[in-house]
Amino acid sequence: MLDKKTKEKILKKFGIHAHDTGSMEVQIAILTFEIQELIKHLKDHKKDFSSRYGLLKKVGERRRFLKYLERTNNTSFLDISKKLKLKIANHPVKEHSVKTKNILKNLDEESVKIV
Image (cartoon, rainbow, N blue to C red; front, side, top):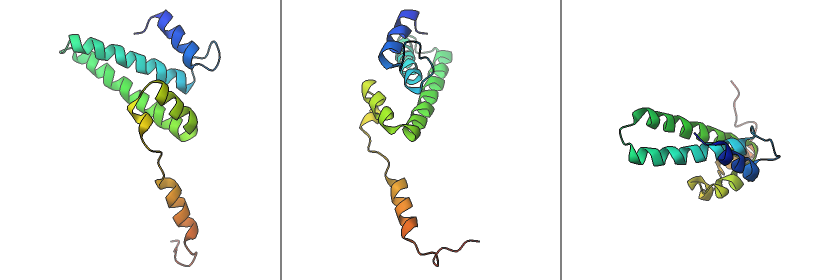
């Protein structure tokens, strides 16, 4: 769990305004710092399985938030992933959805059968 001063620093750095606690960017940043603290704890306490479970839950929640942010605001997603130095920051942007849309546009109406 992060202390109050650390959370305030995160809010100032990633928040949209002074009291922003609910935006995706802030939530992702807080989860990232909590994950880092749990990783440090688990290096010392290897058999603390309840903390390991909590870590996995936080990682999954952050992953869902990142996927949502990537769908809704791709520039913000890239910005926060670079600021937090996440591995996902360097992955190429998904282009398969654009290619699929172009393929569907090029198909003739006769070749597509609607059942």
